[in-house]
Each structure stands twice: as structure tokens, then as C-alpha cells.
Length: 276
Length: 320
Ligand SMILES: Nc1ncnc2c1ncn2[C@@H]1O[C@H](COP(=O)(O)OP(=O)(O)OP(=O)(O)O)[C@@H](O)[C@H]1O
Ligand SMILES: [Mg+2]
Image 1 (cartoon, chains in turn blue, orange):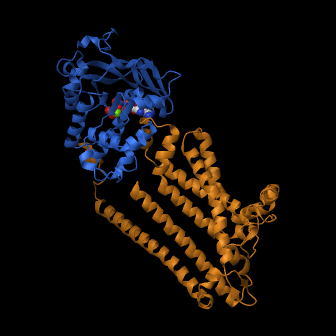
Image 2 (cartoon, rainbow over the protein chains, first blue to last red; image 1 turned 90 degrees about the vertical axis):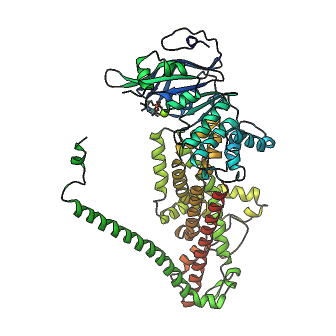
Image 3 (spheres, rainbow over the protein chains, first blue to last red; image 1 turned 180 degrees about the vertical axis):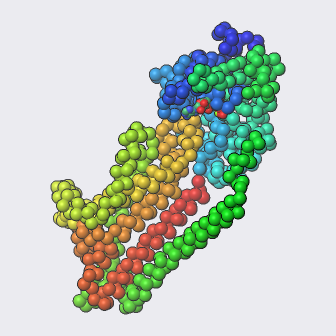
């Protein structure tokens, strides 16, 4: 794959060789009167892991929430530009955000299991997505295995999801997301609250999930990006006159290129830890 | 960064004294809280013991029969409170049947953003103000406004559904049904305020997590948010039930004070609280003991309700 085949702010070429499952075209997001993100254009290719990196407040979470319309929940949020999933504009009039979220799952920074049993944490999503009751045991086991949690919880599936450790809770949240078999899994700093061992498990998991899913992961951990991501997008926030800061995409390329041979000076400074 | 020490509030000569003040304050607050906590328990115990002692003559002479007989005859000094227990439970049950679904519904409605905040807050405030209306005023409203208003409806029930035992007596305004309806209004603010509070207190992540799995808004509310707030909601219901069973003024004004057990909700009845309120003034010595015995039973009923609530909450928390 040639790095030029991917949309970057510098290249206006839109002909991609790899099929893009998600595409942001000139996406801008404003919260009330505050523009958090400006003019982002990028493609997320199918079955790849894409990392979003950049300093705090540059709009990584904002962008990732555009992909499953979770920004809809924040009053006063406007999304400009176009976000397409398999060619369909997900902000189109006829699109039901509920259906979007069934295809595009999300794992949050803070583990947020439901105050239900471990079993029901997974069964809940599966049930509302129309999986049959008779398949439920199988789905629960399969997803917990995929999330590398089965061995630890198989004897206490009736216990509360909240009784697990933070790392286990996060893997439970990953399990409930993969249980509904989305096409894309969005992960917003999924390992930031985890110890190194749990983090490694989550990373291994991402590598495995890549077979079947497309993954977008926000991370502040450079090593993590180099370990798991095929492609990396670097975002930055810039102050315009008046002191307002807006986020934008600086550079988007193969992970290797971003870390070893960045085109932009900002990127080079950031990935080498000499930023700001 | 050298200025850190200069700005530190801990620098200077006042160091020791300040810490001393803080410690004294801390300590006295601690003891105040301890005394308060013990004091509240003590008062409760005192009330229970005192009522128990005063009721002792009645307990000795009527025993358990007091609970299972239906005569209340101050002339011959024969007392039984089965009709009152029945009336207390039935009117409270009517109130709950109405107030639970309405209350939880309104609580959900007011905790979600179905309405703009500018409308939601005044509505919530108005509902909470219902709780501030004195019960004697609510009783007057029941007599002069609600009963005339409901009369055609009661007549309709009796004429068309009189074959159902529940509506089998000619309607009098004062009845268990009227009391239950008014009690439902009175306990609504409790259910709404506490349920809404516990719904609002749920972490935002919970809702986002459900929606991110492709849950609709209603699936999120019914299957994640309400179960997560369950202990708060049950707590609100139990508080409300306690209030409904113990409500005195409204009961005395609206229930009809009739010493009978009939299946008909349209018939007048009595509750323990209304019995005590309506008879205490001119009661003789033995009657007072009987009334206090009735009061003790009301306290025990309320206690049982609260214990049941605890058990429900515990059970639920273990399962979930
Ligand atoms: N709900 C919101 N309402 C208003 N402004 C918001 C909201 N969420 C985010 N912002 C603003 O948008 C900008 C981008 O926020 P965002 O959370 O996307 O940053 P981020 O890149 O994810 O940062 P971090 O790495 O710290 O998570 C920030 O300036 C933030 O203050
Ligand atoms: Mg973020």
C-alpha cells in the first residue's frame, strides 16, 4: 500500500486503492459557539487499525464520536461536512443513529459496565440487537473469550460486572461491544486506566479483532500506537486570533511513516516528545 | 517555581493555632454527629417503649384477638382493629397502584431531556411544592372539590360495574377509594423527587454505554437506567408507603370513619390513624390504652414495610 493513497490534508487525491469503510470529508464540529474541530478529511480503511494521537483538547474524542453519532447526545453540537459509512452519509435525513451505532461500536476511556451481572452485561446488547435467547450462552462465552476474559469470569457470570477490577471491566466492555458484531470498533483511550498487563491484553485483543473488525483507537501512548496501529493520524490544536483554539488534522499516514519519517514539523516534535 | 512556598497558606506563625482550631472543630463536629445519631435512635426507642407501656393494659386484656376482631365498642370496652388494619392497607395500596407508575413516569420524564430545561425545572419545583401543602388543606380540597368532582364517576362505576365486588355499594363521597386517590396525590412528590434524584445521579457513561450498543432511548431508560436506579426508586416507594399508611388528617376527613370491612372500595371505612385521630379526644382510660395499642400496631406495620424494602433492595443488588 502506498502512503499517497490515503487522504491527508496535504494531498487532495481522493482515489484510494483500499476500500474505505468510514470516511470523514471536511468534518467540522462546534459545541455551541466553540469550534472544536475544523476541516478534517480522512479515510478509515477496512480491517485496519487506525490510531488518533495528539495533544489533549485537539478534538480526537470529538471526531471519534462523530463516527457513531454519539455527539447527538450533547446539546448544541453541530457537525459540518460529511461522514460516510460504506458510502452512506450517516448524518443523512433517513439515517437512524440507533442503526449506525449497531454497526459502529464504541469502547470508552473509563470502563462503564452496566450494574448488571457479567452475563447480562453482554446479553443486554445482544438481545436488543435481535440475537435469539437460545444463542445467548454461546454469544456470551464467545465474546468473553474474544476479550480474553472468559477464563477469569467463567465461574461467576452471575456476579455484578461492577465487582470486577478496572482492567477486567474494560475487557467486559470490549466483550459486550464485540458481542453485537459491529463492523467498526471505536476505542477512546481504552487502556488509559489500565495497568501494563491489562493494557497488553487489550492490545493483543486489538490485533486479533483486526481480522474481523475495523478499529479506530485514540491513544496518548506513542508506543501503543506503534504497536497496534497500521495507520496513525496526528491532530493538533491551534489558536486563532482571539485566543480560540480549534483542532485539526496535521498528518495522516502509515504509522511507521508518522513515527520515523513525518512530513510535518509539528508531528516530528510531538512523536519525539519535544512538543509545546 | 520558588514562589510556591510563599503562596502556601501553611506558611507563617499562625500555623499551630489554625490547626488547633481546625482540630477542635473537627472533633466537636464528630461528637455532635455521634450524639445526634444516637439521639435519633434513642428518641425512636423511647417512643416505642412509652407507647408499648401505655398500651400494656390493652395488650394484656385483648392480646392477639385485637388484631383479628372487628368490634370497636367503647361502652362495653371491647376493641378490635381488623377493619382499621384492612382500611390502612387497602387505602395505601390504592395510593401506590396509582402513584408508582405515574411517579416513576414523571421522574423519568423530568430526568431526561424531553423538555427544555427552562420548562422542566419549574415543573419539578411545582411537584415538590405539593409536599408542602398542609394535609388539612388537602383534606378540605378532597371534601369540597374532589368528592363532588368524582361523584358522577363513582355513580357510573356503581351503576355499570356494581356486579364487581369492588364497586358493589352505593357510592358515598367518603370512602377508601377517595382516600386512596388523595393519598396518591400526596405521596407522588416523594416518589418523583427521590426517583428523579437517583436517575439524575446515574453516571452519564451508563447512558452513553447503552446507546453506543445500539439501544434506543426507551431501551436505555427501561433496561439500563431504571434498573440502575432501582434501589433509590424502591426507597422512594417505601417512604411514600410509610407516609400513606400513617397519614392522619386526610384519612380522618375523607375515609368516612366507618367500622366495617367490605370488599367495596366505594364504601366508607377506617384506618388506624383515622381511628386514633377521631377518638383520642374523648377517650376514657381503657379506650386510650386500646388506641395506643392500635398505634403500636401501625408502627409495627410501617417497620415491616421498611424491612421488606431493605430485603428487596439487598436481593436486587446481589443479583444485579
Ligand atoms: N461536551 C462539550 N461541550 C463543549 N466543549 C467540549 C465538549 N467536549 C469537548 N469540548 C471541547 O472540544 C475540544 C476538543 O475536545 P476533545 O474531548 O475532543 O479533545 P481530545 O482530543 O479528546 O482531548 P483528550 O486527549 O484530553 O481526551 C476541547 O477544547 C474541549 O474543551
Ligand atoms: Mg478525549
